Length: 420
Image (cartoon, rainbow, N blue to C red; front, side, top):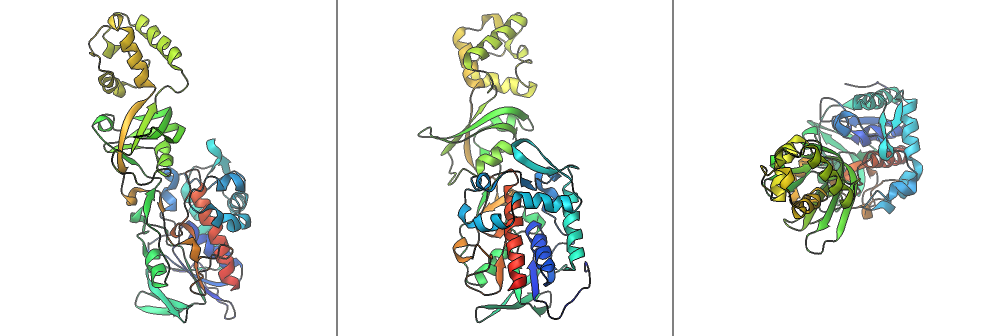
């Protein structure tokens, strides 16, 4: 299948491996810069991972300036300075608006298509590829052909083909069912590159005990999540928003963001504290409980908390408080109320680890940026070899930052590969 059969014998021949966010942007940019571009995609359609990002809504970027953006990149932010300066968040927004996808900015400056359809983002990029004359080949690339530290071509299917430049945009190892199973790391290793240790990032967390399983499926909004070092009590993450209990632990936007701040998550090293009523201080919360008790003064405790908590949480919460659920509320002591307030302001969840990297949104680690020219995304080891997107050792927090990294690095790689 081809988007368009446009060939120019005097143009540089550029191959792009992987038709995800970075790959399509690299292909578009290289083709519009005058290159003869072939885009290789192992799946039967492009943008498979892009279609499911942001729960199918696609958080394309973050509507912030470059300094704020880089403050949300914990891994190698300086490496991105040049590419972000070349193709900023404003440029990404203009790109999709010009491609016929109206955008909106939501809480946290997150940018989504107004349609809330990730498929519209994929369709726009697919259309731009076609208009630019990119040739799409649905084959899995087997390896690179390198001679005298220069790119010569690719091996794919049963054959080989010569190219002046190759851009590796294969993603990491997260969401492997979409095809990102680590091929790019293999190509980089074959070229002599260093791969920094791979870990999941923006990933659900596994918890100890039965509490989370008992609350499986319960979604909490407007809560505060704090992650502390178990021994010292040092706070490593704190934020406000939404989360979800699962059979294995916790997930949701708050938890995924928290995971990017954690390293070496051995069992018992970190503890999560969930404040169910962050808008109320302890005195106000105690008054609220007393008010409810007055309203339901003849009821058992188990039947008097419907105004305070989701139904599914009431029994587990009372268990944490250590109070007889059949005790009448007019018999609850002050000490018991203090315990109730304390638990409401900080349900403790001991963390045991990350879920598998295949369930992560992004991969932490990758091709060492020390071996990549940040101004061109070209390998310092092999002439004509470029890298862009998640395959690089750069990752960010949630909020559209990781997709922007893909778009920025891909734009620079595409232009550089086309111009040589």
